[in-house]
Every structure is written in structure tokens, then in C-alpha cells.
Length: 301
Image (cartoon, rainbow, N blue to C red; front, top):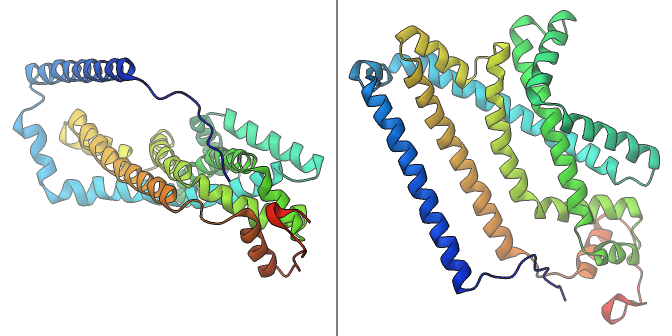
């Protein structure tokens, strides 16, 4: 039987009314700001047709915007894969039985979580260039990927640690009861359940990776923002180019947010259904451990 932790009371009629009023006021403030911005653009001629028509031509997309979007997605995809590997390794390290391994993993994770991503990009850009680690054409991409991997991998490691600690104690107790060791319980029972529980948070982290990849323009990486700047400089419409790039970022991030929300709803529908004893018994059989018999009701021997 599971218990639900209630973090706060559901708002009553007055609370719901206050929340609704706050939402309405917030929307009105945002609309007022947008109206002021649009009026300023109109007064300064930023809606002139000649400033926006370049985006109706294929050259602007095939030579600038689409290659920039591809580079952004490429850097984000590589960084996400490496960050997941980094996060799993150091997340397990923070949960290891060895105090030395836990200490080293904690230092690495906390250090890279504290260092700004932009600072890491600049550092690795100079480091790779000076030491000829990569060919000069690949230095910006490598610096962006490594920086995003270290920062977001540290966040994933913390998600793994907190996800495992957030599981009910009965999960580990059931795993130990069927004959698994502490390490086997961690790898085959606790971490998979923690990953399932934090899947929406991991998908939300993808949005952070995608947005942070735009920082690569500072080291010359030709991602979407940098390509939009080049397009604006060529056509004399830098503001319009940046606005189009912002819209593309918003669309891509919105699609990722929809995926994260769908995964969260799907997990809520499919969560539960199996007890800890049944799940860990199946895992124990898969890893070749003979379960301890004689478990009565409630998992007692």
C-alpha cells in the first residue's frame, strides 16, 4: 500500500479566485508589454516589407537558418547522449558503497554544476585549440558539446541520486530479501525505477541543453543564433533575423515540452500495478540470483 505525500493543501474557493485574478492580471501585463513593443517597432519602421521579405526566399533558409538549426540540434543531440552516460556513471558513483568513490563523484558533480556553461565553452575552446586536441574546424563543436555534457551530466547525476533516494525503502529491502546484493539492487531495481520516475525531468532538461547550445555563438560555433546574426548582417535586418531565430527556438522547445508532458501523463497512467517483491523477484531471476523462499504476507520470512 502506497501513501501519497501532500506538499500543500488544495486551494479553496477564495484561493482559486485569487489564483484566477492573478493569472488574468499577469496576462494583461504581458499583453500590455507586447503592445508597447509592437508600437515601438511600428514607429521605427521595423515592420517594413523589405526587412521581412528575405525570409520568403529559399536562400535565407538553405544557406543560413536551416544549417544553423541542424548544427544546434547536432550539438544538443551529442551532448544529451554524453550527458546521460556521464550522469549515470557519476550518479551511481554518488550512491556507491565506497566512501572514496562517493566523495570523488560528489566533488566532480558539484564542481561542474557550479561553473557557468559559457565559461566552460570559452575555456575548452582555448584548451582544444592550443593543444591541438581536435582539428580547428571541430574545435567549436567539441567545446560546446563537452561543456553541455559536463554541466547537464552533473544535473542528471543529481537527478539519479535524488531519484533513488526518493524511492520507498521497501524497494531495496525487497531486493535484498530475494537474494540480490546492494550493488545489484542499485543497478537492476532502484536506478531503473528512478530513471522511470524522473523521465519527465530528463526530457525537460533537453530543453535546457537546446537553449544553452546558443551560447556557442561566443566561440564561433555556427549554430542557429550565429547564423541568424550572419543573415541579418548580410541583409541589414539583424533584429528581424534574431526574431525569426527566436520563433524557431520557441517552436522546437515547445515540441520538446509537449513530449515531456505526454511522457509525464503516460507514466502517471502506467505507474503502480506491481509490488516491490514481484518486481525484484523477476529481476533476481534475470540476473541469475536464486530468490530466497519462504516469504509470507508483507515480505516477512
